[in-house]
Amino acid sequence: MLAVVMLLLLLAGVLYLLQATISDEAWIATPAPAPTTEQVIAAKSLAKRTLRIFSQERNDTLSVSQSELDGLAALLGRANSRLRTQFNIIPDGVQLTLSVELPRNPFGRYLSSQLVLPVSPQQVTLKQLQLGTLALPDRLLQVTLPWLLDRLFDPQQRQTLLQTVRLTAITNDQLTVAITPPADARQQFRKLLARVQSFSSDNPGLDNARISYYYSQLQQQATQFKPQQWVSVTQFIAPLFRQLAQQTDPEQAQRDTGAALLALAIYLGSSQVEELTGPVVTEQQRRQPPHQRTLLKGRIDLRQHFVVSAALQVLADAGFSHAIGEFKELLDTGKGGSGFSFADLAADRAGTLFALHASRDPQQTLAFLQRFGPPLREADLMISIDKLPEGLTQTQFQDRYQSLQGDAYQQLLGWIDSQLAQLRLYR
Image 1 (cartoon, rainbow, N blue to C red):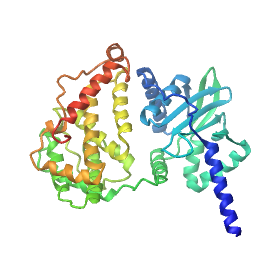
Image 2 (image 1 turned 180 degrees about the vertical axis):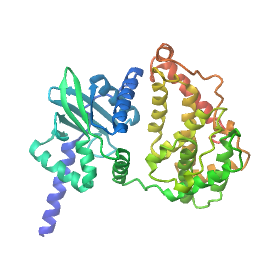
Image 3 (image 1 turned 90 degrees about the vertical axis):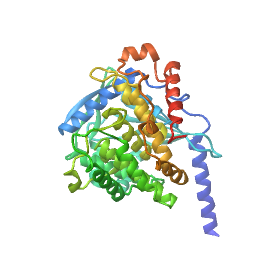
Image 4 (image 1 turned 180 degrees about the horizontal axis):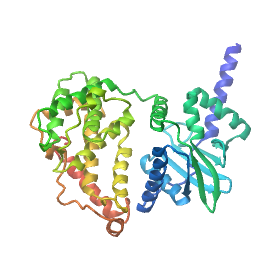
């Protein structure tokens, strides 16, 4: 009898928490507008300054403006349509407001929260946490945060989270952030990222041994070409996917295809993809450099855009992958960039579409792999770039397209997607 009473009390407590924290209204009433070129360039500047400090592995300070925080919120909203964030500089810190759109449920559409990151010279602290209508006392928060971190992370990871970046001052709507890079910063953040990724219950994990296997297959294929020989990316994709087509189990085919796409991105895209997958390439494999003269539509950069975007699709959802492509092109409109390129953006979206067909659904994977029987042409992977504007400066982009939400931009983007959808592999 006592057990039943306790169970009922627990159920009542859970229902109370759900009703108190979830509602039909988001605290941030409207989704963030599409980021402007100025916001993206400001966010890029902030990221570059931060990464420069970490790469130098020395203590330094960083000034952050409200406009840079607005750009960060816009980028987060573009990357995940269910997420709405707002950062506001207040006299004693930064106030973060967050609304997340939930899957359909009987309690409400949104989980909203708010907290303050105060000025703290020693380590990161939080205060004024509110979840829905529930306000957590600061004293309780200061006790529960370290307790929670101690159980989620090892001591070194906890220190990285709490002491690497600290808000130390606010002057004239400018944040002063102190950065203390940990020793071997790259390795530490790689471990921290792996730990955070492990919390996702729907993340089946990556089979790095299979990624390494398909990387070796790409290296073997490269032995057929002379180092100075120009070849098409199809010379690597076609043999790889014909090998994958021998799979008969749908789920295994889907896993192997995802692993092959990640190997392709590490080999022909960027070795930095390995930062996301974890260690893949063996010391022996590193002794044989990738075949550098591999092209898509006659260009190395389009090949890189295609294979990296395909890998990002394996690791993330389509919206996030598309957003990365758009942000990359917007960043190039600033000084020192190559200019906004719709050709690069088309290659990004082609790579994403390729991965969607190849690895999203097990049965679809099997059907897609059968399309590699006929000879593979670049026209099966990517549309012609002859009519796509390139090299647009920030001013030229704004004059012609206004923003990512502008009618002219959306119309051209829709045309690119419709043309991609007509290619043989994607029909």
